Length: 151
Image 1 (spheres, one colour):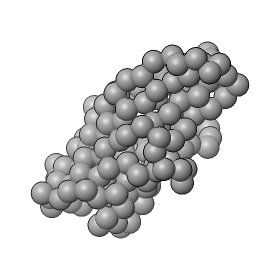
Image 2 (tube, helix red, strand yellow; image 1 turned 45 degrees about the horizontal axis):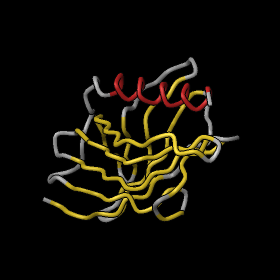
Image 3 (cartoon, one colour; image 1 turned 30 degrees about the horizontal axis):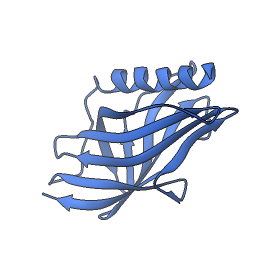
């Protein structure tokens, strides 16, 4: 349980730190909204974290990309501890993004100590896939978003 909360704290801390940096370039001319479709190939609700006794589920999610290089990611998640519901909440992350070819990056923070460096993934007109980047590298869930609206 402590490992889960430590990882959750590091993720939130890094998202806040990353949000303070400016995006180098955003390749969008319009705003786009994407709906979370799956995590690690599993349709929602899907488990994004599991360990002995702890399980975290994502029930819904949305990703909004804006032409100024800012992004907002929202997810509704619940947690269980040894089979007992431990609560749920809507989380919102705000951070800069940039697109280079078919690669999309959120945060783009370099570090040497154990830390979260941001999300990275693939970008197309209709689909965005994202996963975490950290130092040292660990396995992060893969989130797949599908375009729901372009403005």
